[in-house]
Length: 189
Image 1 (spheres, helix red, strand yellow):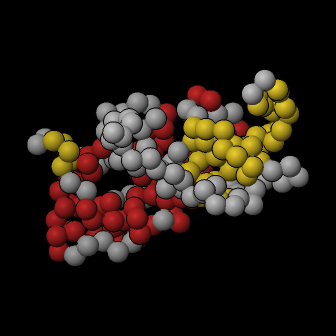
Image 2 (cartoon, rainbow, N blue to C red; image 1 turned 90 degrees about the horizontal axis):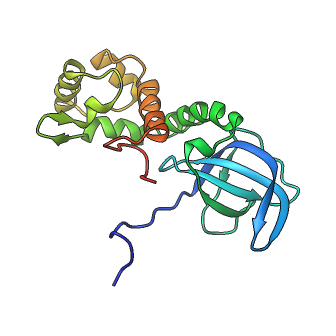
């Protein structure tokens, strides 16, 4: 019988560095001082803490591999962390990293606008995005019926929606900093 609540484990392959610092690490009964990295995952915006390999220098906004195969920069992943566990530097870098991830994965987020559906009979997923009410929702639905959106620029031109990247980034930040009822882009803790 499977453990858990039937939820498949999802792992991040790549992440963006938010902060890199020397910190005391507990390894069993020993305490070591090592390079600790705070990261945000590229696929599910998972906040992680990891130990960098000795001698590795990382800067905020570096994109690094953190998958299950041989890692160049990371010795091991300590685990998931909450927004409250982030350092001041990491909190300042997070919105920049989120926008970078959205822009680098434009196709994935444009597809959200093309496929988003109702969550309840009275609430559509598009309405959970900041600044999108009924008027913009209906406009997006009408335009995507005619032809699916191809880019953020196409979405902006056809609907008049101001800066979709900022709108999505704002929603992602809400999901990371609060406990929303519905999650559109992030993984539940």
